[in-house]
Image: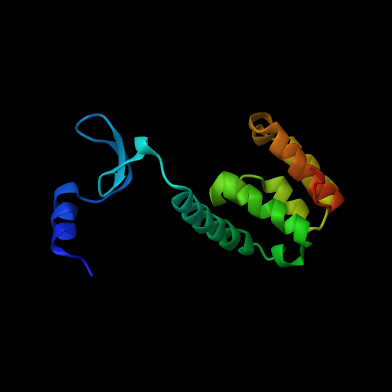
Length: 138
């Protein structure tokens, strides 16, 4: 239920679903939410859980996903989370190798990417998990 002050503020602020600069140049989103003030840990957790659900749904779209071990599924979900569904879909050789259950090639292809250049520690850790089917110890 929306009370009268809520209705008034919503009418004045309007809804913007992408970040924008307000009349004072402050990065804002939603119904006038000042992003420069940051977010709470609860809000960050809510956003994370929503984005994680989206990454899992995107990963499940691949028929081969359910055949992967728990560790390898986690790698794919992690990549989906970081790269988005479209970004992950650009890993054509990795995806083909996963469909063939060729985890060595999948791991190699993960390291032959711009993603590896941009986030080397993450890419190396995930590639090692894909190759070994083991969770990292650190």
